Amino acid sequence: MKLIVGLGNPGAQYVKTRHNAGFMAIDRLVERHAPGAVVKSRFQADGVEASIASTKCLLLKPMTFMNLSGQSVLQAVQFYKVPVSDLLVITDDLALPVGSVRLRPGGGAGGHNGLSDIERRLGSADYPRCRVGIGPKPPMFDQAAFVLSRFAEEERDGLASSIETAAAAVETFVASGIDAAMNRFNSKIKSEPSPGNDADPEADAGWGAA
Image (tube, rainbow, N blue to C red; front, side):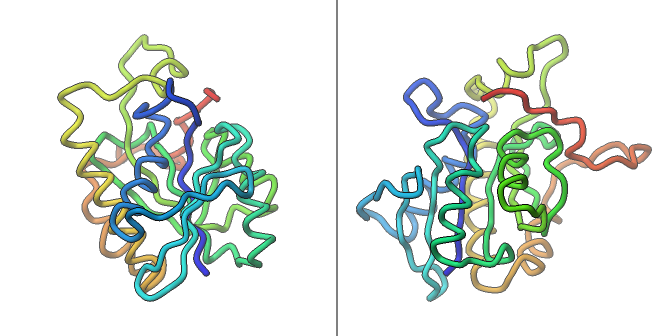
């Protein structure tokens, strides 16, 4: 069993917002691997079972709102006894531009409240994650308002590309592991933090919204 979790907020007002990039990636995976599947409400989440690379996967969208994402993840991990190495969390990332995707085997939450809650409840930050770029935030723009905003028309091609890439990265993760997924997809990042910044590239993200 592989557990694939996309982070976001439930409710019509949050559909297609930047903070829901994880939900979008899960929806694409369902379209590719379990079209027409029945969505089950369990673990305080909407879940779909799918077979990816001949492996049973649970595609999960927590319905707890972003800040309590760990509640849902912990319940699913405990029920299926999934090791953290078989958990992949898909999340939005302000530190990456729209159109970019980056995978990591673990690391800090970087101010992302959803990742922080997962880390706190699992007692570990050593779970793989796939970060979908939603930035950069325009100067003088309120950060919470920005992550809860929808993508501009000129960003939509980049968004579509990154969602497809995230779905393909999940498929590689399931088939071959996080290192293979990183080797294949991290090279496609369009931009990186400035060379003089030794901090974690997530460190300045500071997602404070629900």
